[in-house]
Amino acid sequence: MTTERTGTLHDTEVGGPGGARTVFLHGLFGQGKNFTQAARTLEPDLHSLLVDLPNHGRSAWTDSVDYVDVADAVADHLRGGFAADGPVHLVGHSMGGKVAMVLALRHPDLVDRLVVVDISPTANGGTGEFEHLLDSLARLDVDAVARRADADRLLSEDIPDERVRGFLLQNLRSHGADFRWQANLALLRAELATIGGFPDASQLGDGVFDHPVLWLAGERSSYVRDEHDATMRRLFPRTRLVTIKGAGHWVHSEQPEAFVSALRVFLTA
Image 1 (cartoon, helix red, strand yellow):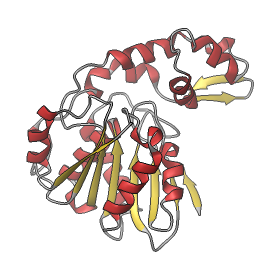
Image 2: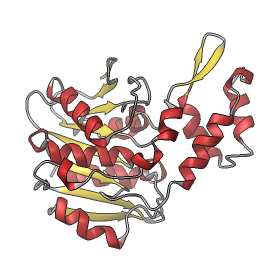
Image 3: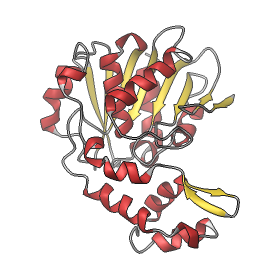
Image 4: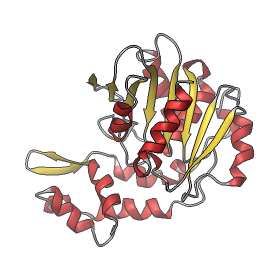
C-alpha cells in the first residue's frame, strides 16, 4: 500500500500495519521517493514513511536553513501522525542523517532505533562538489528546455556523470509546457555552509541519545572518518559502525542489496 500526503511536509507511506514503523529522510537534492525501492523491498518487515524535507520535493520552501528548525518540524509532523502511537525507527542519509541525529537528540521520545547513512555529527570538510553542482543547475536556462532530455544534454558538459545528472534532474518538474526546479536551489546554494555544518551542543537537548544506532559508511566515501568516531560515540554511545563495501556517498543507490540487508537486520532485531 502506498499513500501520499501533501502539506507543509509532504510524505509518502509505504506498507501497512504490522511492520516496524520507520521514517526515511533524504539528503541534499533528494526526495522521500529516493527510498521507495528500499521501502518496498523491506515490506512487510517495515511500514515506512518517506518524507520530503523542507525546500525539497513537494514540501514547502523556507526563508533559511537551520537543522534545529528542520528537526523540530519533522518531529511535530511525526508526533501528530506516524509516531502518534509511540516511537518509530529513523533512517537519514547525508543531510537527512544530520536532521535525524538532531531530531533523536532533541526528541528522544519519538525515536526507537536510529540509522545514520554516510554522514557524521560534524562540519563537513568541504562543500566544493555541491557548490559546483548547484552552480551548474543555476546556469541551466530552463526556458530553453522543452524536454527532460534537453536539460540532460545541456548539463552534460558541467556534470559528465550520467548517474549524477539523472539524480539531480529528478528535481526538474514540468508545469504545462514549461519546466521549473522543484527544489529551492537559490536558498540551498546560499545556505550551503549551514548545510555542511552541525548544531553546537547548546542546541542538542540533553546531548545524548542512548538507544541503538547503526552508522553506515560508504567504503569509497570520506564523510565518515576515524576522527569523527569520538564525537559520534559521545552523542550516540550505543553506535555500531558498518562499512558498506563498494559504496560511495549514495550508499542506498550504489549498493541497494547491502543497504536493505543492513536495515532489515538492525531494525527488526
